[in-house]
Length: 136
Image (cartoon, rainbow, N blue to C red; front, side, top):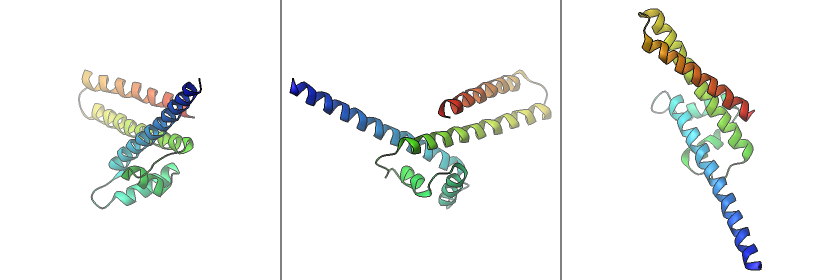
């Protein structure tokens, strides 16, 4: 019986460690994508990280360590903040796309393709709003 308890405790510990490292990997991926999109060119990585840190109320070093893969663990609060920042970043990208579609519709003839893109962008914006509500 004690052997089963030890095995259950070991499995639970491994599961928790897997969740922590997975969260770190996901947070690192979010950070890398945000930095890549924020960077204006070679030599701008640190400035991009500083802008992201200020905009999303994150730590410069937290972003640097996640981006470089040096972060071993991450708190739930930090993960939530990074996920929220990533969703806000995606929201800004979708808003820019919506503005571009509107400009193209005004500039060119009305087309079903642009109307379809506008509908899809609106649906994506609605999904982002739901994701933001879930996070809080």
